[in-house]
Amino acid sequence: MSAGPVSLPAEARLLSAHFHRVRRAQVQLREGPPPPPREVVRRPAHVARMLALAHHVEAAIAQGRVASAAYVASQLGFTRPRVAQLLDLQLLAPDIQEEVLFLEAVDGKEPLSERSLRAIALAGTWEVQRERWRDVKASF
Image (cartoon, rainbow, N blue to C red; front, side, top):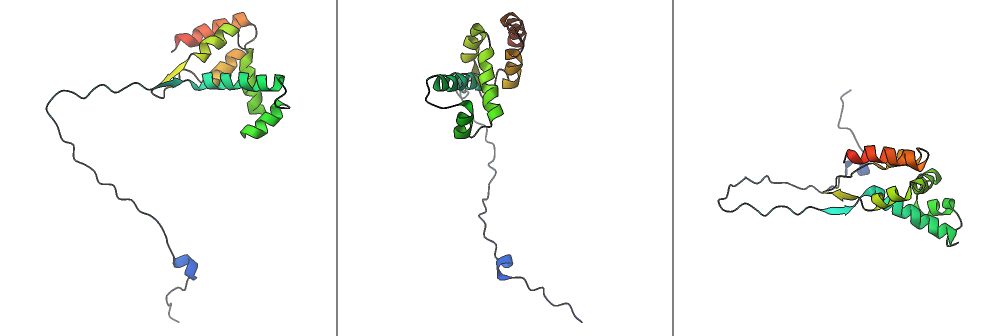
């Protein structure tokens, strides 16, 4: 017995793809003035946006525009525990919340993670929160 060519279904032999060729450019040195400095990109920090969202959700629930945090979770595509995490950010002392709302991400670098901020929010009294906030704030 000789092994002949393998017969494949027509669908298995059809390949459709788009290929993109990238050419590497040569680096050319130029004489003259240096290029202008790159503009720094600033935007509100992720934790600031999440705290603002928490206040927005809480206000919507309080005003009766939405039935519950569970409904908000389903509408935003979040889980119920995720919405609870967001609402926990409101446990922060008011002065810390104000500072967080003014935090900025510079060139995409976030000043702190939401996880560390939640740890501060769940630390206990506002005095304990302020002590931990001072420690975290010193790092950025």
